[in-house]
Length: 230
Image (cartoon, rainbow, N blue to C red; front, side):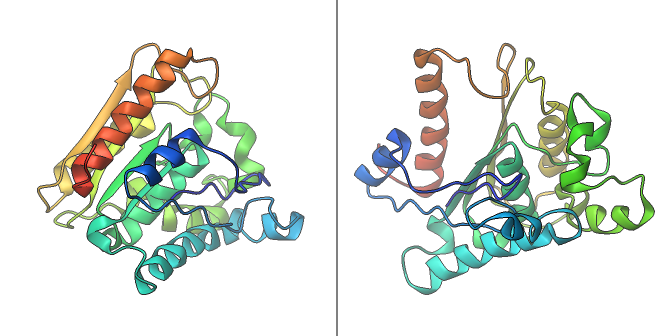
């Protein structure tokens, strides 16, 4: 289960080598339309931004529940993945409903939403998320900020965080500190891992060989945690 749900960007069905490989190995690949995206126009976008950002996470969680209810999967076989704003999405999902998921791949994510705007170019995203420096906006940002929702003793799913030193958009501090706090807090024996690329950036510009290596690492993690055959 994957998604984005932000910045008026549409994520619609298209060919994906990763999705094809996943299905060839017996998986089901789900891509729901989430409020905050651009799939249904600007009103749809505005329904998942600023004070309404929780709607995006609710839509994603509802998609997971639908897949389980309709027997496409069950929690111990359900993985979620997202990057950038989609990393925030899966970070929120795993901290709000950890019992729904077995494994998570969270790439180049925003996770400390209280301080996100202080680093790199993130100040330009305040119109989308808001700023904790505004007392009213602080309330809803803090309420969903994944880093601030981690609770000691909670049985969290297995998580692979992916980031890199050369990310000039989302500071890798998000993935680093979230890895640390989850490793300290989780009440389960599932691994909390950080894949840290000292030369990797946010997205784009990668040679095909590097893209294949990264996809292999992420799929290997998911196959391992879901008990799939490679």
